[in-house]
Image 1 (tube, protein in one colour):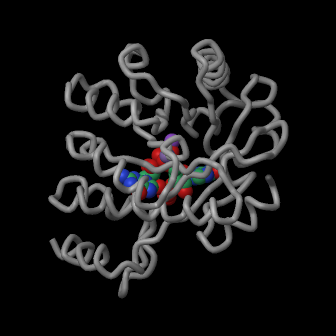
Image 2 (cartoon, rainbow, N blue to C red; image 1 turned 45 degrees about the vertical axis):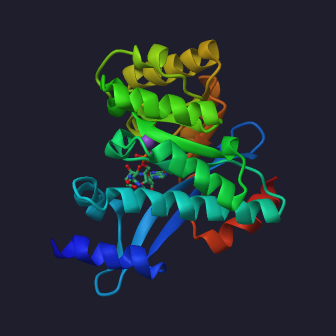
Image 3 (cartoon, helix red, strand yellow; image 1 turned 120 degrees about the vertical axis):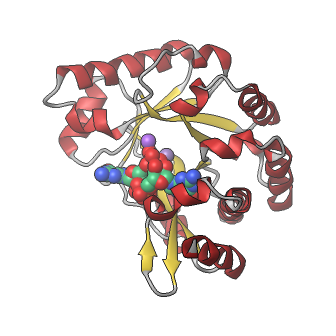
Length: 254
Ligand code: G
Ligand code: G
Ligand code: MN
Ligand code: NA
């Protein structure tokens, strides 16, 4: 595939694949609780591409390992830069399911943390529920190894996995991210509101952070506060922004 050949070049060129950064904030104080890294590709001919345009093909290719290492390296470089500016919020990255099948991942993460001198707890790996539900032993082992290093785990798109919650008893996680589909419908749909409330309660009960995603309006923010949710992310607070903008934004909020 031409796209994959071009991506291989992009991974070498170092200036085409960039991270957009979106803070999540504490709903009562406005202080950032973390920042999510979202990859974008500045393609030499096609302009800006969204991860929707290329992550799928990468996941099915032999480039996945190199791509995952690239994202981890860039994100930890960003975290190291923040530390130099006295900013110490955690950075979250989105991991493809298949990258968790690689038993070398924990050692690669450990090496990258050391190289950038970033403490492991500053890194949050976002994983979708579907991944965590798969019974594959190697995924459990990879996640357990990462967590025992001190890296944090978040369940992304929580509530969209159409299945049991048993994975929460199998794999210790630190954070649940309420999928934006529930946040969007919360005001009209009692079901969506109940799911958000239940997730917030579950998080409190299990001692996990809960972050509501995709908050676009002040009304949604108010409903979340009523439901007891303490942290949120979305265009209402910040759109994903370039790495050269974020330090000043974070410093102004901390
Ligand atoms: O950033 P949003 O722009 O459109 O991201 C779309 C989707 O791509 C989301 O599901 C998000 O989790 C995913 N995504 C964003 N960045 C990365 C990345 O670095 N790696 C992987 N595997 N997925 C990503
Ligand atoms: O799957 P994941 O939750 O990682 O996807 C995050 C996606 O949501 C990214 O594409 C990001 O750009 C997008 N996003 C972030 N905030 C908002 C928001 O307030 N509204 C919408 N519609 N999308 C958002
Ligand atoms: Mn995410
Ligand atoms: Na999500």
